[in-house]
Image (cartoon, rainbow, N blue to C red; front, side, top):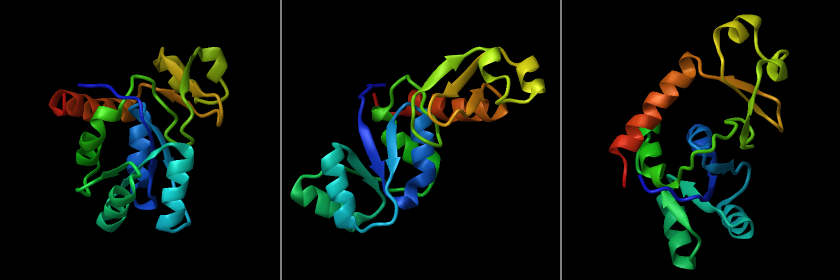
Length: 155
């Protein structure tokens, strides 16, 4: 798969897709509470490409030269496949978009249950919101989805 580091801004309706994109390493913001003009202005000011399912917004972006990725499906795995060329190998916090940092058990001892600390060896922590992550069953599901997209995606 071809790897391109890109910064994206998702419209509100793609909030869950933005979270998945963060896990895949894509710098992803979610735009909330504003119109298309405000979204396009923010995209230009922050040097981000817009990700939307809104065909009219995508057409307006194309007409005035604002980078835009039109998502054509409602299924998150297929949406991620459309975004596959924008992934990096650095995981981001699905909640706040900050890159995750590898952490030891001591660092996350207050952030995860003791049973998790006993069962797992690898941990990551968000340096902004202090959320802890580990390779549990949810991670295995995410990995399967991302691995399938990498294998079957663009390249």
